[in-house]
Length: 183
Length: 140
Image (cartoon, rainbow over all chains, first blue to last red; front, side):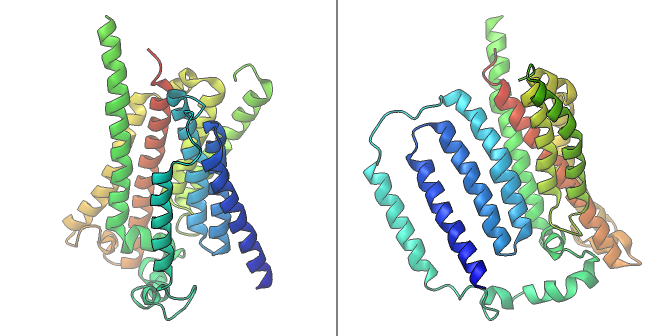
């Protein structure tokens, strides 16, 4: 119990430091790599919360793919941030106010892991007790994602498909037009 | 990075195992952590590693756009058609019980496996497309 708490506090401190570093640093490449570290730390936090499926996604998408995509984007925008003041006060105010409202919102949340909390009383007991009988799938996270909440996952996949389609139309289309104009 | 022996050898050595692990994660989403999304991303990362080391032209030869474009849609199509099949068999859309009317839980397991496969196909193809388009966008 004590060890878990220590590990959690340690991870959360590292998360804050990495996030601040990513905001403060001037080199966009360094910021990208700090974000990758942030994702990997976040994956560790998910593991500590026993949400291994989410941890897996965070490590694969946040730490892996989005880092590569951000680095590919740096080819367009350059490696250095445009010079300017370190703190942009209007955005800082917006961030601080939004953050304060969000933290205020957490005061109404049920205690962490409270079995009497509303989300744990609704459909979750049914999934935990019945998913093995109803679907023969031992990992009920997968059963919930693919079967009980099949519509959600279908449209999430459609969102990813649309992102790919948009990129093909925008970037490949622009390249084809450039090539034609040159002819 | 093609001229660096270490990178070349490691990429060649690792890429097949990353692919295998990706397929394992997709197919074993029912048993352990993972599923179509994570597995799809892992498969794409094998391709991205290969492309980064050997250049995007070599990557293009392995996985050309005329293959990855149809795969983008194929995954969503597979997912959506599992739902349509359930409807044709007399159930609600995406009601996998009907895929094996004699044993509904087995139908559920089959449906879940098929839609996870669909998610994996679309996610890996879209990630490959994203990487390819961003890597080539600056080219004439």
